[in-house]
Length: 414
Image (cartoon, rainbow, N blue to C red; front, top):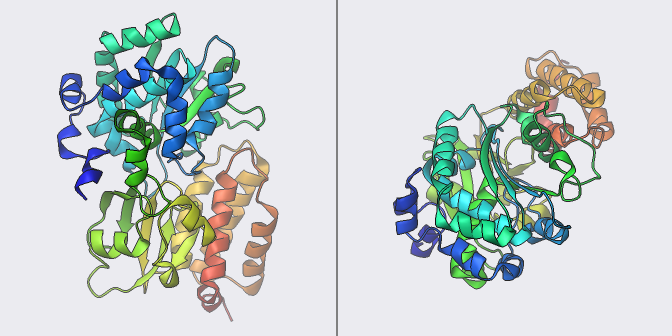
């Protein structure tokens, strides 16, 4: 496990906003190497098989390449630190404890794509994250590495912090762009994709905080070093936000591909006293449920997908026997209903109807027609919104119906 401590969470890199302390521990070396050969950055990221850690697991190099290939002019790198979904708390930790690592990752991305605008987009409901990021950005403004990057770009680079709207929907990438432009974070239909038309129509990359935090280590130590950190074919490490009915909830950095059982029962200490494992919401409440038969699954994007689930952000919300799945799902769908921006009627109305039906069943007032209505909504609602909010709400309902239909049946009125 010693080699894993070199990646994101090593105790001696938790230096907060102290740039000199970060540099004294090897910070800046990744950026310096990137600047010495900027045309090789994309190949290094591709060889490392770095994926997007915000949920989709999309290859990072594929997101960067179109922006790198775009004509000279304004280009944007946005670090998405809006993190607002229940059970997810990894980005907050990174911005509070090692913001320079994240900033260095954004600057390497700027070098790779020749972007001249870097934005740290931070949830204002996490005031320490916001304050530490602001302090860290201020310290970079006069550093020699930033000046060297500007020489590569042939002009000034703007590096700034933008507080997000604080809304859940504000983390969707087109909503992020709208917020950075100074408007309400209404998601937009795609295409055009941000790489083609983002902030003020300029090519734009929106990366999750954790994704960018991996970049300095890859450039510093090399792609093969990073790949070797994972298990089997999985590359690198992953931050897992573990919560729910476990003895040691918390944030764990483990090899990508660590088994679900190892995360819960070794690092999480197992279930609470007298409790038995029942299920886990993977990747936060907008994803599917895994059960006892899935404890052997490797926690990487591809392996979890083969179980008809998604790794998502790496949030794992553990549920014990005796806890009501219907109630948990009702709570999460209520969160989505409240978080809908109201722009798309099927989303606003659909999440409300899902919430209403789930609450009826949860409180013992549901009838067979309510269960059938839930199933019908799960069939007709996916894809009806401009973003993934309605799809996330449907996914968790549909998964719970598939895995725990007997619980729904047992709570219906005779």
